[in-house]
Length: 69
Image 1 (tube, rainbow, N blue to C red):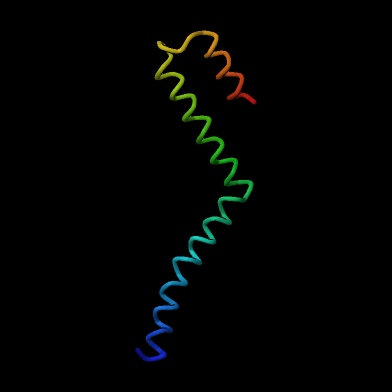
Image 2 (image 1 turned 90 degrees about the horizontal axis):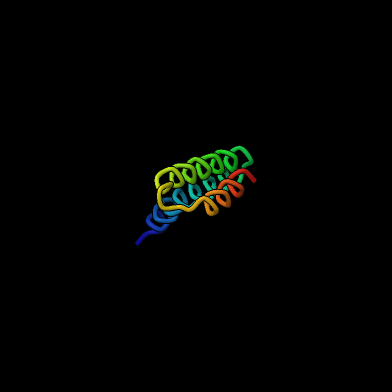
């Protein structure tokens, strides 16, 4: 394989690594953390509503307290 063949492989591998690195950095930004937190809270509410009939009142109170923290 020629030197240029190695360069093609090297540059082809760099793109996904760079994209993954940038994605990781973006997820650490405060705005991304807030959005992720909002999504998690919404999912927690959905689960609580879905299983409301099988979750006791005491457990529901604990869940509500943790969601609002």
